[in-house]
Amino acid sequence: MRSPDMQKERWNDAAGGFHPVSAPDYLPEAQLREVQLRRLKAIVTRAWTHVPLFRERLDQLGISPDDIRSLADIAKLPFTVKTDLRDTYPFGLFASPMRDVVRLHASSGTTGKPIVVAYTEEDLDVWTEVMTRTFAACGLHRGDILQNSFGYGLFTGGLGTHYGAEALGAAVIPVSGGNTERQIMLLRDFGVTAICATPSFFVHLVDRAAEMGVDLKELPLRVGVFGAEPWTDGMRERLEAETGIKAFDIYGLSEITGPGVASECSEHHGLHVFEDHFYPEIIDPVSGQPLPDGEEGELVLTTLSKQAMPMIRYRTRDITAIITEPCSCGRTLRRIRRISRRSDDMFIIRGVNVFPSQVEAALMQVEGTLPHYQIILTRTHGLDQMTVEVEVTPEVFSDKVRAMEDLRGRIAHAIERILGIRVGLRLVGPHTIPRSEGKAKRVIDKRTD
Amino acid sequence: MKIPQLSVFLENRPGSMLEPLQSLAAADLNLAGLSLADTEQFGIMRILLADWQRARDVLTRDGWVVNVSEMVAVDVDDHPGGLARTLEVIAAAGVNIEYMYAFYLRRGGKVVLLFRFEDPDAAVAALSAAGIAMLPEQDLY
Image 1 (cartoon, each protein chain N blue to C red):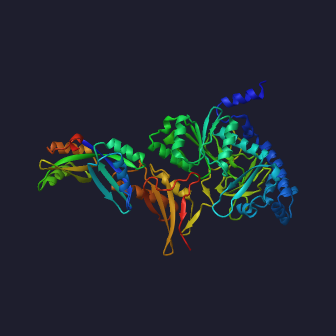
Image 2: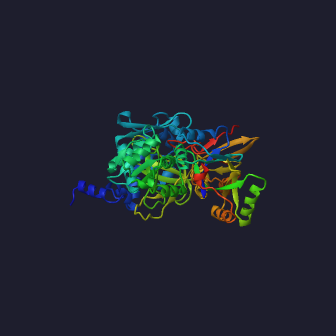
Image 3: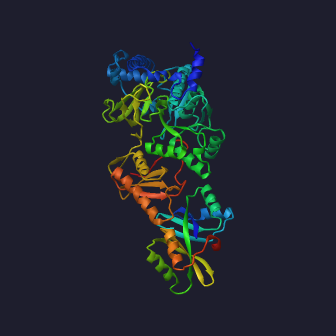
């Protein structure tokens, strides 16, 4: 028999997806449910013992950790919401004393206090493990050179992906976000084979590379691992066609661990949830009632192994559905549909619920438009107006006024067909829409009451 | 017989034409001809110059959206009916004119007009057959 080290080497030399750390991806279902139930009981007990807010809530409901006898019993537990983290700022939801905490992260949030998350050494090991499994699922292996353009710092994206990729055996370039031209230089000079970024930053990078005369198709770049904001399949097709990479969607949030909660595999059909550590449920966002697998609703996650800060039934605000059909990749982990909407991103205009992703989907339907766009909401004489600004690209630009007016009409029509409301459409010059080096800000709401 | 023309997308706001022209000036590129199409929202600046490849690269590098299209330069007699005769030939050939503008260069009683045809090849054939002179790129600058 081979020594474990030799075996590791061999796995690493094989194609992606078969790193030994990925073994839990392939657990038989019964065994997976057993692991989940055992961990759920333990984590509920831990939160009940160490987190006063959680204990009070269970007491109010007249339940105790002993009432969790099956996975279905999770529905008896109260939800945790983002404001719980704000209300207990900074450390109120910690279940570990500070001497066991080895890392703190915080998300800025758009209003008020940040939310703070904590990790024990064991939590960091789990985080690294799920990120290694993520990269293996994206087809990365030892020998890959990974440019990590996720921001390093308080944001979990940079460091989470960093340690996962190192554990896989990839060479990590911790470039962080921003400084696009330098990033393109590194991509080319270092022979980078994989990149991690927000999809909007990568689109920006692709545009800038074209302007600099760098053809990404000519480079060894093979894989793009994108997350931290919703994007569409249409955008994936365009990115893949223009750069010759395979683009993977990954999912995570700081409250749960950061990146590494779920990842696409080679099938690109939904994201496998690493559900031996993060238990997924779908609920009706209005009633809070659990929905059966396959139905669309809000994703709720429970951390099954997190020591420093267990999250029980955390409401993510992300809209998706659980796919139960077995995946051809062989993983037994259930999948969630690509998240293209957040209930937080939704805005209401003239009584119609609109998600920015619907606008993006419309833009994708119109040949050749790249998705640098922004939605501006205004109110004139009490009437809401929605204007979409779209940057003109070389692919769609014509010297003929008629052709440009026609393009404008086609885009406006595509959006109106999807939303069912009239929108204004402005073609704007290149680089006029602010580029985010993190998450793109798609909606500017200038309506005042 | 076809003349490359650069078009630049501009927003309809004060100063929008200035910036690309500053880029060209900084690269020591001189315009030979210019025409501006504008709508309520945006404009299209069309320019002619000898070193159009370098101009295209400079503008692209500076982040402008640039398009290259083929123009036909027609020598038109500078007297009443000069343009009409050319247009008769084009109309008879059934070729659409997308737009046109004059190139202010008087050459022995002739004026050069720049045409953007839907089908430049058909237009060139029709004009040649009618004996109407067109200018090659090297004679324009």
